[in-house]
Image (cartoon, rainbow, N blue to C red):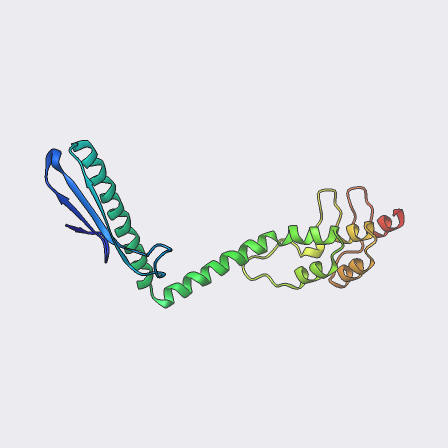
Length: 188
């Protein structure tokens, strides 16, 4: 008799071609009975065939092994101290912050190109904790040499231009053709 849980048992009766398995346990009641009223359920798997009996036996053994592994994992988790769980949560927060910091320049460019002044201001004001960018966000440039100030001048974002210049954006930055943000604003 192998215990499969608090209310479950597996019996192997007989040997060879006359193997009989009994798998029994308590399960929640069906809809026609009171909710969660335990009902004793018995499943008999008797077989004259050694092969069929072997298949049933293997299936029930697999259920038993999986249940034991699950219980061991649950006990291991429960035994972890509160301090270990706190350290795990803190490490996860650090990983999330690092990922956010790596994505910050892309988010900043999207905000500038969409003339989303509020988001751009928040991204500029947010301090880096884990990594420092090679240049401040307001001093970035795209492959054509355009700075955020160039983009805001091109998109007629007066508020964005003022905010970027107050955040020490370069009003004299030149692109690959030598144009400053003022040139871009005049062309536009």
